[in-house]
Image (cartoon, rainbow, N blue to C red; front, side, top):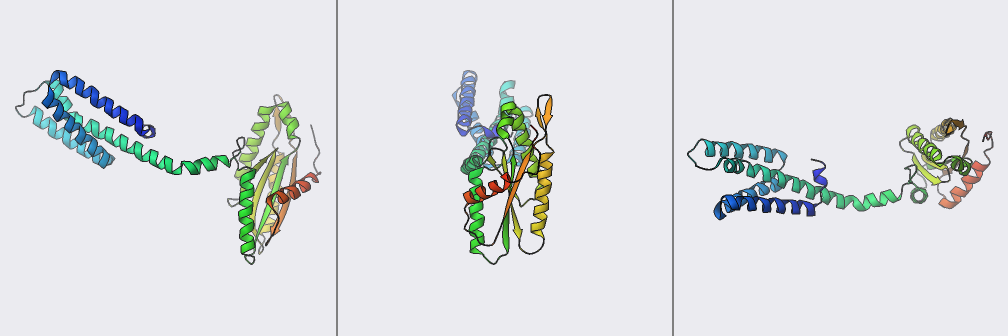
Length: 288
């Protein structure tokens, strides 16, 4: 049923018209004009029930119609060919089901058309490889948060922006492009699994993952996020880069910046500053 709902209304209309045409052509050769007109009216009644009702209504109405039709046509003295009797019994339920399917298709396509612009916009904010939000979305979210902090200066809110960069990504891609994509996808999934629900994850390209963590200036939320950042870097480093039968360590450069209260830094300035800090993170050994 869920696959039938995805049929476009144009195809459903063509299908209903074709069924009516085939029905009338077949019955016209057998019965003549008046019986065909009567059966067409019964079919229209079935469509009307399907359009106006729901699944339960169609099921109950169809059982009542089939029970009543069976009694009238088989237990009363009505002379009629056997196939015509059977068709008169099932014609209303058949077209009631077709009407219900058409109604579901119309409603499904209506909802799809309503949310399609939002879906299209959402897909443009995602990175194709990792499935995380891209750089443009990071800039938009950061500007929104910055404007909020500037508006409510005494709210005690802050923001920790953390960068995790896979070093020598171009060399890894040169060795095995498919393995590099698999590594980035695994890191993106790990990032979604171990970070807090309120954290927002982004991928800026060139192996750089970004986590934007809101904090409060009261309590130990800043210390907790910093500990979580260290855990995230350690977990990232545990993922090996597998190049066919060989594997090598993944080197992760880390940098973070804490923004407390109002700020005038743009997203590009934040990216530049955190990138410089991550470039200074030379505590790991590079094994290539």
